Length: 108
Image (cartoon, rainbow, N blue to C red):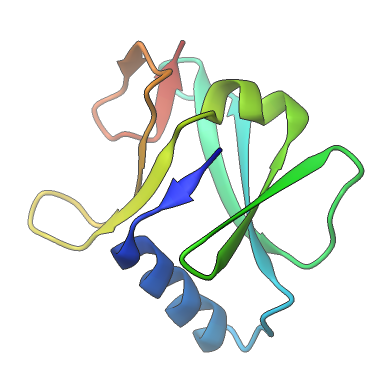
């Protein structure tokens, strides 16, 4: 399961509205190879589910994750920060054994 904080849910809804997307657009979270730690997170809006997608809903936000990525993301919480120490979406991933300094990539 992938969850979102209240702050992240509000920011996702704000961005979806700002881009003029309907509520049919959900957040797709995926893991791809790359980055300085080996694996990278990818966030995007998508309106269509793929056959391999799992869907989670938390705080009014639907999150689509493909079956391969859920192996790396199970138990992850998506947060958003706009404070002095960083701005943007952050993944609190209990499966990550190492992350890079910018938080964009991780290893398991």
